[in-house]
Length: 260
Image (tube, rainbow, N blue to C red; front, side, top):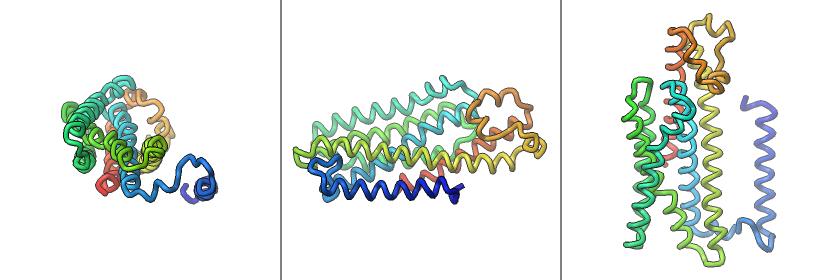
């Protein structure tokens, strides 16, 4: 529960530790994260965009395999292999952007184009369900990967060209760190949304007797997707619908973040 002592306590401790970190970094002779970097508008924008990209990328990478395992019924290994189109799009876009930047010296267009492509891809993911053809799902993954590929490494280039030489290392690592923080927030927030939606949808889509027996619960589904195949058809179809609808809400919640 959001109002539980554990959650409130973690929020308070997190805020206190963040304040302590800022206070110490202000007086440290060799700070881990020089606060002067935040006076640089390029660093701030790149850090913000990197946070959002990490938020969207790792959220998608985490929950697409969940969709493939629970809705499509593939194995854990195959669900991982099914993400190859996303990685292919990311790799192709990164290489292409790097080649164009090295020839023209201009890179601003790529984060703009990349975040737009990723937003469109995330919108496409809000439409997937059990009937979505695998080639179409792969196309959505390629689009998301291409969007991410246009942004991730280009942000690093932008930061490296905007800071003084003495700050080159810390600026590069800090931009990457902010992306990792975004990924942590994304997985945590998406996970909370998914778990809550799944519990609600199970109550809606499953026969009351299946819930009252205690045989079905969200934790067991996420931990053992193969168990779905051994359920009665009526319960199996209800579970698939509940999972698909839950992931629909997850991607829908991420859409405005990436759009902004």
